[in-house]
Length: 217
Picture 1 (cartoon, rainbow, N blue to C red):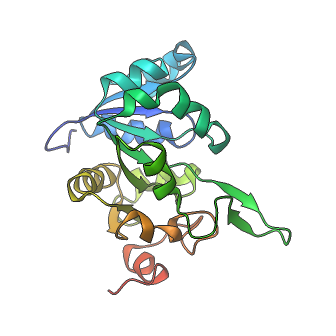
Picture 2: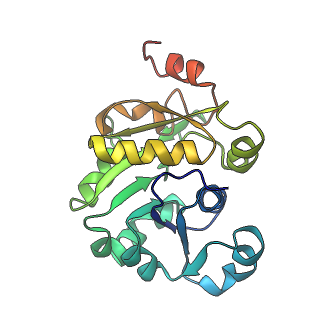
Picture 3: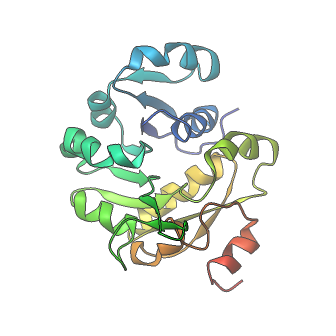
């Protein structure tokens, strides 16, 4: 059953363990979903059985024909993806769900970016013609489908961005995916979403999420 008040054209750039469950949620909510892949023919069985209302296409076509794009490729492929389709992302709303994750010498999860630089800000600098919102970064991918269907809106998903209108769209998409949106503020306020941050990689109730992020109730 559709729950989307205004159906959106959503492209998934990276139809893997993050992109597939989110695309399924959004398609079920009534959005027009395109799964983008270097080899879209490999997605035919998945689309026909798990997400029959969606379609598969190449990365360039997906970027060009959709208004909202989810970046969900493995982080080592992030720069290559932007080089390939970055021009087509100009003027689009970009949900960046990628994570620059590494390990410290002590074995702790850390961000591989320079100190003080969030992935959201990094994306916005790399895509100056796009509007970037960070979301779906701190939730373990294997839980995106089960928690979003079996315990709808019990769990929180944090998001951050600088544009109020874009954030409202992403807030709605988080809700349509079966989670409760929690606003962290702007892109420079989103370090808690990145690897090494207090939210990564965990699921929280909305109240616990706000507390972990240091927000007031």
